[in-house]
Image 1: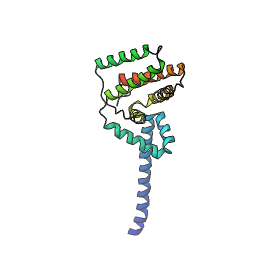
Image 2: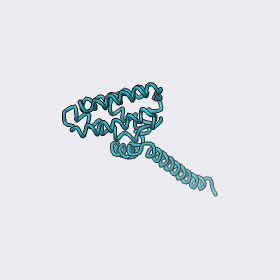
Image 3: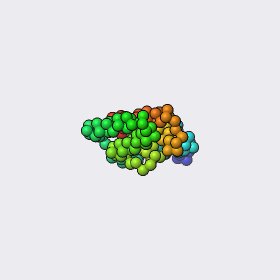
Image 4: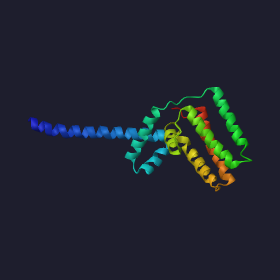
Length: 180
C-alpha cells in the first residue's frame, strides 16, 4: 500500500474515532448534569433553548459553585436558626404576609452565613441549583407567593403553602443535606 492510501484510510478512521469519543464524552457529561440537577436540567434546557446551551449554563454554575466558600454551621448557630424559624411560624396566625417575608429573609440570612452570595433571587436559584436542586421548586413556589403577597394578592392558604415551601429549603440548608 502506498503512503497516500494509508493516509486516506487512517485520517477518516481517526476522525470517526475522535467524533465517537467526543459524542461519548458529551453523553456522559449530559448524564452527569441530568443526575446532579434533576428537574432543573429540563427547566434549564427549556429556558436556554436547547441542550447544548443548558449544558454550558449548568457547567458554569458548577464552576462558580466550586469557588464558593460553603460551610457547615456550628450546632449553636443551627439551634439559633431553628429558634428563629419557630418564632416566624408562631407569628403566622397574626401576620401571615409578614411571616412569609420574614421566612424569605431568614432563608437569605442562612444562605449568606453558609457562604452563598445573596445577590438576588435569580442568582440565588443558580447558586442553590448545584447542591440543592431538589428543593428549588419549593423556593420558586414560595417566592412567587411572596411577590404576590406584597401586592395583597395572595390568600391565607397560599401564604401557608409558601411557609411550607420555605421550610423545605430552610431545613435542607440548616441540616446541610444536599452537601456541596
